[in-house]
Length: 430
Ligand code: PMP
Image (cartoon, rainbow, N blue to C red):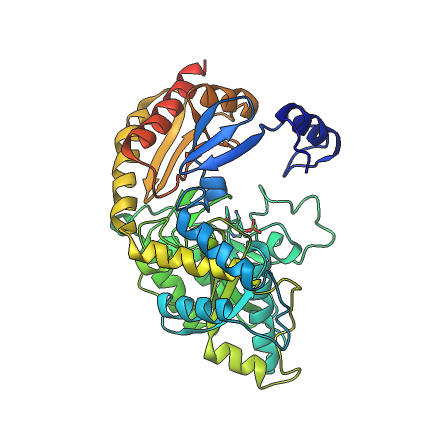
């Protein structure tokens, strides 16, 4: 097998490959990664840099972990893939059992699918089919929060923030849902009942049309990296019960420890009716997602025409992905992830909070292994990335946000390096 040099990779990439949210033949050519180990990326230009993004937040154990590698080696010797229609296998069963055990007790039915966006599609389908099954035909719309992000497929895109999402571009085909102001409370101490009023009013006026509330619990990720207080979730749960609306918790970004709890709903002690998991489900190794729901929802769908959830991806429950997900969960639970995330939280606070007074900075916030520096003006992404790489750190800023979500194995000096690289970026702003 002939291998390409980094220069050839870059050349061919520029010619043929389309990168996310980038034009073809973009002005910012991507950096070539040759390999990755622990928290480090080995770039084709010889630089070895700390991945402060954990590859879009999912590589919680770092790269090339021996236990995860072994799980994949073992599984590939048995079978790489098999269809899930009419067949089942140990990696899927083992994973489902773990997910049911770890998530809120009410969630007992697991649908495995390909990616976060698909998990959201499935969650929305579950909610719609549930009300159809009960004969409540009018309940076909969703309510969600502004500043949210739930994925790039059409149903998911329709519940992303209407301003910074793609609603304008696709307005003729996107279903119209209800958007309410996102909460601004940082913790329960600054809770005011006015925070929940927009949701209450929308549910009061429109609950007969609304199938479900969908939200990202505690952390709104790609829609703005905003944090909000648990009380909002408790009140939202109570309103969903009062108005007969299902609650979908999108834990794709927050699941598996990122916020300091295994799942962000635990901050509020609530159970959603449907929960979406993805990203770090496989320790970032492979694409896999899961949509979990209650027996009430799965039985209503199963016991009424058409008698099935109408979804079935070709690569559903891929055995390789399920086996590495099972191994990743075991690895997480067998270690001291809670202490590691708490330590990273402390290190991020120490390293970032001092930037709050910087003239270019609008806000600094830290929760769990998430550190966010919000600027007053948008950053030049290419120039910022190059400054960060010169400091030995990989981050991918967007808009006014410079943030880190490092692997949980990131050590104190590496967290400090990420924070000081952010400081160098701030000082480069005139
Ligand atoms: N929901 C949330 C909260 C996310 O953060 C993301 C990805 N950033 C998605 C859904 C979509 O997941 P994927 O990119 O795997 O389709």
